[in-house]
Length: 279
Image (cartoon, rainbow, N blue to C red; front, side, top):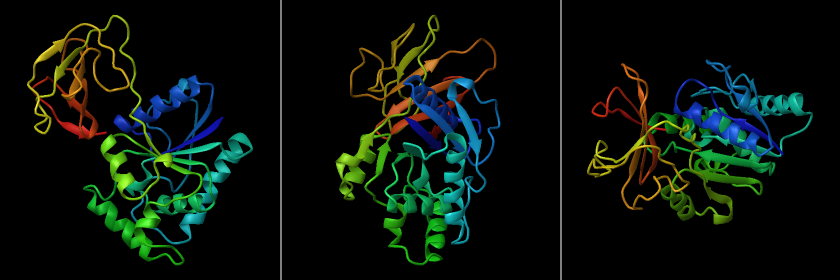
């Protein structure tokens, strides 16, 4: 199976880790993965993640011309033909409906019309607190002719188009919007397993006010992180954090948190200095 994984960039951060984990996991299943970015990676791309390529016009874009849609569409098609000699079995497009690239929104709408095999991996919606993105998408949509209403253009439907979301909340929202459940999927972010011998602490989430946790330490030593998103043996109700300690000294500790709206990433110098950021 040939999979084209599409995203705006691979700059250092949580999103790039999601891309790398996804590419590695898919390749471990024996599938051929090509990651297509809007710019070359700013850090070394691991061999285990497979091949990558950069396509002009795929990065962040808040404006464009109507003719940019077919240009970007052809550029993506040309890249996979150059790499494989054929179209992929699946286009796995990351966060397109966030509208960080308004032209890509139009490309997805065109792919939906063509019934291309597309899986939209959705982490965020432009309608969910991204007013600038939404306004830019509306302006660009208004410049186009022969397209449907804005909501249908930004969130198209097609025989080959499926959606994967991080949380059950988003799954329920899309279902209430009329999307069929046979084209909706719950797909949490892939994460790396804690290396053997490393210690970790799972604690109740108290630093995020909306979590309402107690801060009680639940366990120490190695902790596995099952697909349900909480440490083994933990109750199902509270949100959880996983802290992977780093070597001594002023190094950044990585925090993974899970609450009712999905995973969050925080970088901290110590457990008392938290800066939550939505992945």
